[in-house]
Image (cartoon, rainbow, N blue to C red; front, side, top):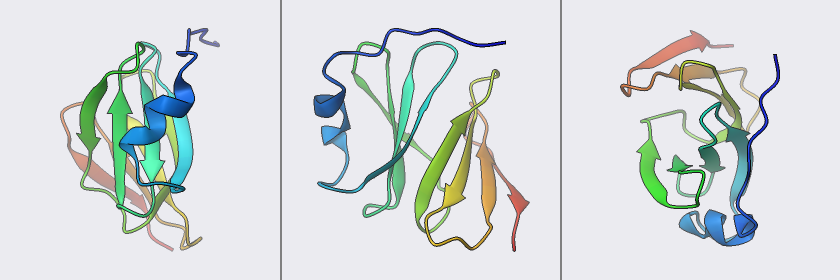
Length: 101
């Protein structure tokens, strides 16, 4: 199943909630909200489909980078330094470590 969503034309402005030049992974959730990893500030920023910053996801891995949103509203996170670590952050903020290499 695929999802279609409308991403704001101002996506470049949207990632301004991240440290400059640190935008890594990007994932679009089924509700149209967007997750952007900020590997410099070591956080994931969550935005609404209209571009409003909703907050931060985590705590997560040391250097979050790769992202994938799931149907339930959670997000999978991998590290930028290729350690093999994978975490899942549930909508309620619960963090589960799925893999440690």
